[in-house]
Length: 576
Image (cartoon, rainbow, N blue to C red; front, side, top):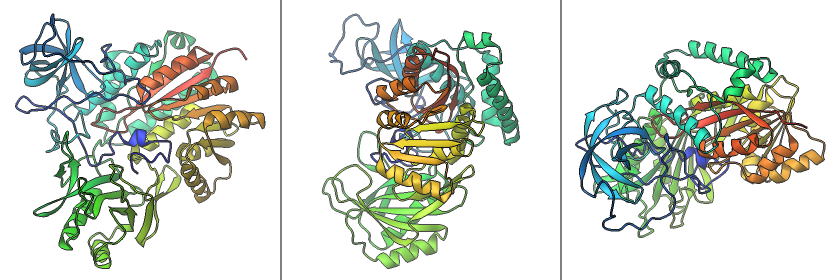
């Protein structure tokens, strides 16, 4: 799906975490490597994602003079600093005589020699020159193009270290932005649990642990566990990671260019629109790499031209590949600058012969001079218009442009935790706000009496209804509209929710939706978040009006990147 297509939980917000294709990485910069610090990302809605310490870069443009008087460092000066934390972009945070420096490639706990590259009044950027003292979490990034690509930011950090840092990122946001009280956990215990998630080679231990957690959560929801723990603060569990944190992506979106040797495809070089050819991406499924390589080879053989952004000429713009992990089916989408494809039948025949597991070949036509991937017209060149896959026991039809989570393994973990926190017995009525194509709604429908899903994107609701029919689920109803408009109307119709699930975009919940939840007062709220800072902000609003956040579980949907999902469980404690 393109980054502008919001069908499906509005999750260009989520898949943009790794959607620019095959591994884009902004990364660990060893002492001999040159890298300019990346521009800090800000969440939609103007609120920056939280850093893993209290330092946050000021928003807005700051006019930079050639020399700022009174700073303890100056541009091009070399200095040795200790790295005391890591911000949400994965940059190390150090201090030179109290002045904050952001150092790309440096890890917490390291002592590094740096060169100051840019200074502002309150902070600056520095280039890593030498690692004087390395962190125990430092590893060699296995990707050969890690320093050129922008999709992975922390491959140079051990996986156990990544999981621990992502939990701390969530904790820091809850405390700093939400002003929420977080239960202090034993550091050694948390480190051991993160190590378990990072190193576990079978699912049995994790299954047993999840079973124990389910029993504990049930008791907490019933209010029979130790209230002292609840009074001490929110429990933030260790990040739920992957047993194999590589080759997890089921979708590749690859821009196509041309060189003297033929078609190239991979990623844009940093700060440019120059396409760097790439043969493999370690976070993509191997079959995605194979299909892209074959398409480039076959296209070059038939003399297919690549689209040129400057002139608006050339045919092939992007190659999009989707892989169904459970069924093995694959879809290939050729995004073209026009309807006519030279040697179309021969090209399709060659692709089918070379890639027999492809079940669908589609063409999307995009004639606009834009960086948006998809155009409005999609047609099937060969095979079906959809491929099928499962998340848990729920089947989904995936079309060329429909949304589908890019990490199906962790999606099942994320949705399983959501159902767990909902505490369903089979008698409840559940409302799924921001329901998208119904992925969470259909998971909930397996355990609830009735589920109502609402989403503002009409195409997403069409997909949700189709997926409900595909799974023969009759206890789920979907409606188009804004949650804050539809849910009050449902209440007027006599629909009362025992549980409301929200899974908003990065900007968080609309304030009117939060007010709607507070007016409806469901017994439980489950908040699925892709942005720790807006999660913290919204939890503060709910807590101030009668809800208590019981527990938060971070989930690693995108290993080796700085992005983290979270699921929060809240229960009503106010007066009706």
